[in-house]
Image 1 (cartoon, rainbow, N blue to C red):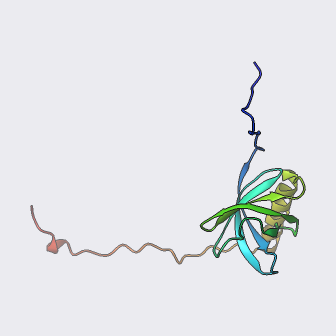
Image 2 (image 1 turned 90 degrees about the vertical axis):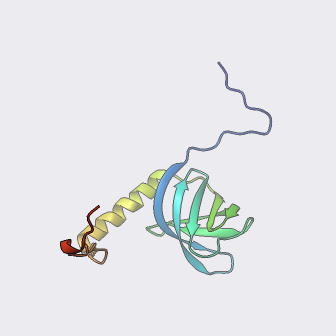
Image 3 (image 1 turned 90 degrees about the horizontal axis):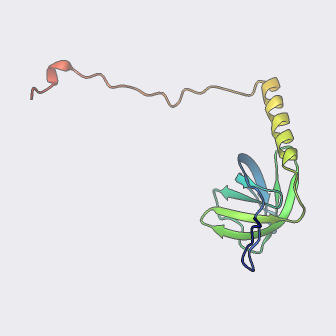
Length: 132
């Protein structure tokens, strides 16, 4: 059975959910840290702490390992935005860059366990309980 789509509809690329830190370089030259939430062969969705780039703006996202992806912002909402890439992107390139980054971190010993989120249980005097 052929699958037909109504006029004006197109198939979307497969989106791969990822949580990847990157940097977006806006058209005015300012850099901002972003977290890529999903990526496909032709685009990506990301979130930033500050104001996102606006629709139609040309930006470059620099992935871990220094791989630049340039394109145009297609939508934005709140602190999130989506962009269409100028050139097709090979997802395997991102996977290899992340593996290299993880390997370098292990070799340098940059991982630290922090205890600042320690839970303290208050001590209660059992003689102060009320009987019900």
